[in-house]
Length: 403
Ligand SMILES: [Mn+2]
Image (cartoon, rainbow, N blue to C red):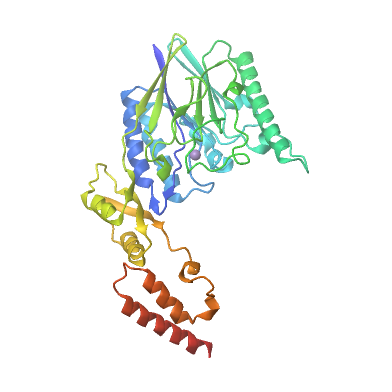
């Protein structure tokens, strides 16, 4: 008989991507996760930090969390949740005592007693022990010294982390020897590949820690914080990554959960890809090319896809800039929503400097004359007469307001 464990992290409940609420995405993930827990007969669910996106989660985010936990009750699956750098220890720990009765174990922040972070599980003749280590805050790992340098701080954080995990290993050896050990952690490991949505952790991620600090006893290290799934050091130290993309830089990620099976003290690891509920797409090219791609666009996912557009044109033109504005302000399409856009020109009109010939000074010209020069330069404009008239109206209005 074996024990099955599922590792996930970085749910970021309550997260908004630009202005899009990702509540529906997480509802679909939770449905999929629950089905996976059933079909894979998972005994323990590990969530390695960043449960909520905000230290003070919104009420819908809290409701979503508790509804999901409630829906797991018939499964008889042990749940272990640790706090991440986005989470408030107090918020996570508030319902701790009640949740533990339901076999949901919450370690919101570094516990007073290290033994409180150790959770054991036994089924048939197989045992595992989980060291549920949350995000370690400065106060948990070092003493702040007034006037210390930046480099000293980084060194102290690294040392503090190392000695914390040494104690974890020590506690394990003294209390649970020979039981397969799973360590959870929420931290930035050196050389991990980041995206745009992880908030900086411990002074600009400079204190990236080496995977050797987890020691040699852990059968598996279940990490959180980095949103792109990846393994660190050896194949038994992994970031599961976030279950859904939380920024456009994650649009190519294959989101996943990790299944760990322990049988006869041997370990097997398998990744399971999470279906995409909403695509994040970047469309780039000339205005015409982007418009064509938009009109051909068909969504393959249950939720409205989010599109960022990057228009690249040769010559700077107000017409093109206006066209982008129009795309950005258009009504939501059934298949997609444009949430972000930018335009760049190979030959951009620098500034007024390029409107002046050698020896000419801007003070030699009246505002209306500068405007006429500017119109002359933009060959793509077709409504110069109207623009000139509008500019004159503006000038008149300014003159009047100054009196
Ligand atoms: Mn995170």
